[in-house]
Image (cartoon, rainbow, N blue to C red; front, side, top):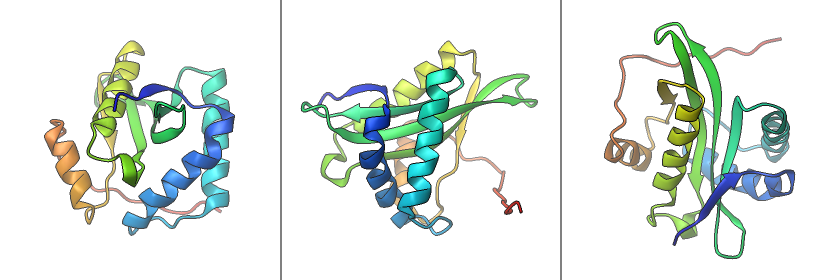
Length: 154
C-alpha cells in the first residue's frame, strides 16, 4: 500500500482517537480515554493550523481513510543548540501494519523536522512494547541512557 501522508484535519479526529486507543492498549503508563485523546488531538490539529511548530500527520488509504498517524512538536534543545522534534503517537491500524506505513510516517516526520531546522528527533516508547523496539531499531533509532519521569500539575 502506498498511503497518502498529509496533515490531519479536524474531521479526522474521531478515527485518530480510535488509533490512539489501539496504541494506549499496549502502554502501561497511559490509559485510553476517548475524551482526553479527542481533546488532545483537537488542540494539536488547531495549533498546527496556526503554527508550523506542531503537526499531526495522517496516513490515508486509497479511499482517503486514516490508517496511521504520528504527531510531532518542536522544542528547543539546549543539548543540540537547535530545534528538536518530540515525536508522539506513531501508530498504524492493526489491519494495515507491516506494509511500510509506519516507516513512511517516520520518514515524513523526519522531512518535516529537517525543513524546520531541527537537528534531532526523540520519542518515548513503552519498554514492554517489543514490536515498537524492533521497529525503531530497524529504522536506525538509538536507545539512550535517559529515563522518563512525569508528574501531574494541579
